Structure formats: structure tokens, C-alpha cells
Image (cartoon, rainbow, N blue to C red):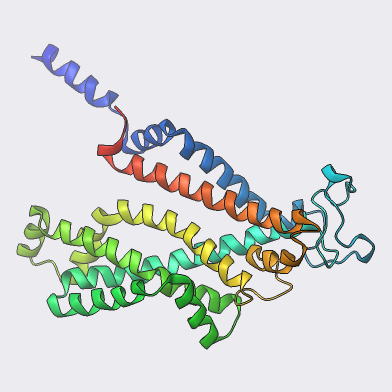
Length: 300
């Protein structure tokens, strides 16, 4: 009998932990691994911007207005050149990463908390609340996101704080719909029925029983929501409704440089590349999270 039990115990001990299985599945996606590495570099640059940026983001060098980047014959003091006001482009891009990531993470955090609360409420509070919440989200989604964000900022006034508010409201329906759909799927399962029979209160049932089993799709949505927020904020910044000068926000940098698109194209190209690389990196990481968190999508 012990001879029969020993292999079984060894097999149980040899099974990888859930985190090890998740990490292994994530590493199998090369695009996600590359995206995560790039994202880590961007985050580190944003955190340590004060240490690695060669100049202050708003410091002007009047003798080097619209200086060329170093590969086009410029000086090594300004590796990526300067903008129309003589400010170092590299320093503004590095500090801009801090602003853009702050917007993305802030929007994601607020939309996640509010969206999950509304989604659980719609799924568990009855048909009337469900109809009200879902119809309200449908109205928000029926309006083009950038148009709605512009209207909100136009009412509240252009600022970084109001940009976060506007983009949060625009992105809220995605979290509500994901949370509601996941919660409705969990509410039909036996463990929820057993918890109700045991007398678990609705709030505890929602937060400690249903929500933990809905986190996988919500985590993926949160990761992708950061990139959506960065794009929306950049669009508002480009229209002059986001972060106001001299804040080094990538969308505002694009707006300031658009008049030089023919004469000095690098001034407008570099902020656009920063947005592109950041959004692609976040999306690749989000795709990897989706594949790793869903056992059905893991490669055999």
C-alpha cells in the first residue's frame, strides 16, 4: 500500500504552484514578455525621471531652439533635440512618461473600483437596478469616447484632474459590463447557492465569495484600460483640453509640435513614438495576462 501511495504523493509535490504555472504560461508568449520588459523600462524611467533626465522638463535653452537630434548633426547635450521653445525633448519625454502613466493608472484604479461596484450591484440587486445600470452604461457607450470626454472637460474646464475624471467616466462601462457578466456567471454556481443557504449576507457574498472568482477578466481589462486611458488623455492633450503647459504630457507635446511637422518632423514624431511604444507594450502585456489567466488558452 505505501508503495502505491508514494508515487501519488510525489506527483502531488511535483505539481507546480498556481503562480509558477501562471509565470510559465506568460513566458510562453514572447510578445507579452517583450511588452512587459519594455513596460518595466518605461515605468522605471518615469519613477527615476529626476535622476536620469539630463535637464528639467521646462528649462529653456534659447540658443538651442529646435536643435536637431544627435543623429542628424545635433549636439550630445540634447540627444533628441529640442522643441520650439528650446526645451530638451528627451527630458520632456521622460517626465511625460510619469504624467501619462499617472493618468493611465489613476483612471484604471477609479474605473476599476466604481465599475466593479456597479457591475456587482447590477448582477445581484435585482432586475430594476440591473436595467438602470446597464442602460446608463449603454448611453455612455453609444457616444464616441473622445467626443464625450471633450464635452465633459469643456464643462469642467481643462486640467489634469478633469482629464482623469473625463477619461474615467468614458472607460467606466467596460469594467461594469465585464464585472456584471462575470458575476452573473458565478451566481449560477453551486458554491454561491451554498453560501446563500448558509445565510451569508449579500455584501459579504459579493465581496468575499463572488468577486474573487471574477478577478481574472477584470485584471485583463484593467491592464488594457491603462493603454486606453493614455490614448484618450493624449487625444485631449492634443486638443488643448488635457494637461496644460508647461506640463510635459505627450499629447500636449504633439499639439505644440504640429506646426513643425514639415520643417522639423522629429519634434512631433518622438512624442508620437512614445505613445505608440507605451500603448503597444501595455496591450502586449495585457494579451499575455489574458492567455496566462485563462487555462483554456494556455499552450499545451
